[in-house]
Structure formats: structure tokens, C-alpha cells
Image 1 (tube, rainbow, N blue to C red):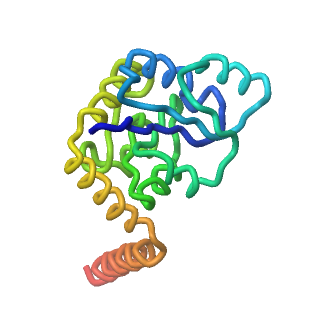
Image 2: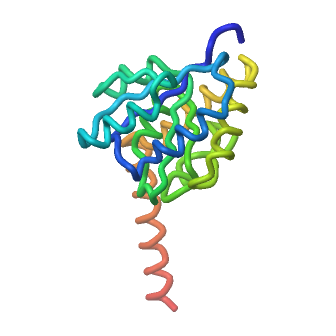
Length: 184
């Protein structure tokens, strides 16, 4: 409280990433308590259109390394309108302790836990995205710190050692299942 909440979008500027949806949602949020920054590039004509659409609403930073960008924001917005297969930027945000507000599409809901490491909203629903942004703005500092800590903790699920251990456990289960079938 007392300083604006910094929201950010990082990625390719293209129609399937939901920038039009973010714009509709953002315009209905009280901006005196929040700021929006956008980093990324896209096809020149589309990028010009996005910049015009967000004129006076967002700061554009162009292409940036994700680690540098994530240091500048409090929440990452992932408003995808297509079935994101994984959403690597979600995990990158978690690894920086940045909670995420994301479209519940594709593989994203498998990565996120509603209210624990961020907020999910129905794909294509600008009003639901607005509500999620408002929820983030209304959080207490203690709740934000807890969400940030959970995001950081959940990033550990995607470290190489953790993934390797899960693979070995699954392979062990498959071998055990095969052995049981051979003996029955």
C-alpha cells in the first residue's frame, strides 16, 4: 500500500497472446493504484497497433531479458487467448518470486495454483481479468509476500533435479507394474 502495484506483460506481441484482452481489462481498472509495463516485440504493423491501443495506459520497454524485466514488476500478466502448451514465462516469473495473473488455458492451469502463486481467469474474459487485477491491487503486503514466497517455492518443481526425480519415480512405477503383470 502507498505505492502503485506494477503489472507487466513480457513476450511476443501477437494476437494470440491476448494483448487486446489485457487492454480492455486494464481500462476498467483504477490506474491510480497500478502501473502497466509491456516488454517484447512483434510484427511491425501489429506492434504499432498495440502501442497505439495502450497509448497513455502502459509503458513500452521493447525487447528485454526476462530476469531484468521481472525485477521491475510485482505481477506478471499472461492473458493468452490460445491454448498455451506450457507457458515457460510463468515458471520464470515464479523463479523471480513474481506471482502471475494468467488465462486458464492450455497448460497454464497445471502450473498455477489459484490464490497460492497468482490468479487464474477464464480465457477471453476481460471482466474476469479486471477482477484479478483488482484482487492483486487489494492484497495486503503480508498476503503479497506469502504469494511471492509460494511462487518462488513452486518454481522448484521445474528445476532439473526435481524433474529428474519425478521421471525416475514414474519409470520405477512402470517397471513395477510390468513386473506385476509378468508374475500374474
